[in-house]
Image (cartoon, rainbow, N blue to C red; front, top):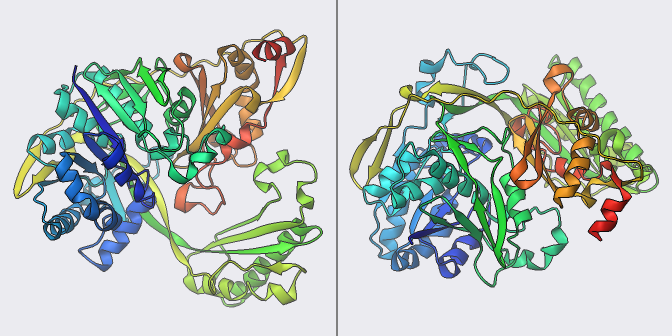
Length: 598
């Protein structure tokens, strides 16, 4: 029975460069894939291309990962797929071919083109923002469609040994090779869903092998040599998740499931260009040590649109960090930070520059991110790091702010120390995200393999019917002899962002705990718990879905991140800590149920 083994060596641009060598030497893989891109990365790469027409791609991929590994990759017959092309995939192809020539390796490189729509921005001027319906901004730094797996499969079929893409959905770097190897048709939706779910599980690298894991103490001894993930897929769509033998980390149903729930929104309708995935019936089974079998993936026809993410300049920002210690450190830190902001605000108004358009003060160490749920006495901590982030359309205003930080050391509260900037902080452009939908029929895709250029046709008809809103089940378990325990006793959690929305997956440690978790974590309860970060009114709503196959729940907290990503001034603009914050939530549980669990 044919199987295909695919290892993922990168979760983002900045991930360890050592993972690729680990997978090449120890993974027994057929394909090596990389995920480098995020919305903020695209704006950074677009700015780099504006300065240098030969830049705009993930240079680490060429210089520090592929260049030293090319001889071994060629020798082992491993094929590579990476979205390292950023906003300039042809330049990435050229640099990789030059690196191969220097290494004495002959290798055929393919590129997927068509995602970059910024040059055609006027053609899509009628598009509106997905959530709020706002019009297209007048200026964009980048504008890219999330392409799918079909062009990658086409490049591989044309003989590419390495395929470089620009923006594509993260899971496509896995699904593309599987479509090519197994000949999956474009309407074999269950298989396409399985390949996409496999890609989603491994796209964040070590996050499915014990990284970012709730039960981190089970894994900490392996942090120095974390194993990166490998999926082994069968033509039927059944697959396993594992890691190279002898590496750190852990592959268990819980580590895999935390990543499966990561940033998925509605688990019944995870929208991708090639397929809509349904996670609700997925089942995970420990097949062997560090091997998890995944079954039950279901898929449906995709939509007729591509998601398009554009970034546009939205003023400037500047941030400063300093430590303040001693009695009432948090009070002193907030008083000092407030004094700095007010001092600069007065100077701005006197100079006719206008007020800040955004200010965020956070005393890190005083549990301010917990809002009203901070522990009693947390504000009395004897040391905090104070973060001040400000936003203004004029960089002159931010340079004035930067000049006024240090004076607090002698002119404000005692204990000011540890000024963490290497000199004065510098203003930076705020790239804000604009997400929209465009018809697939209006996006032309082609692949370049070697010197050959080929048009790629993809299905454009769509056919997906959105599921109705899920009714919230509110059972009433018998709690006559209840004890109250923190959620972490009963569940694991993983959180992340979807634009300005926060996603939290909650996993019952035992199936019998789920009714109590479900009863405690109503949408109203979760909304109340995170009221301090949510937008007001209906904009700050919370949705909840159930995944019966894995005894888990998934929550989406709308407009909870202060704009999200690089557009937010908050300390946690991606909601990475939200899952950990929810694990403190008090849950009533029958005492006998805990006794049975031991």
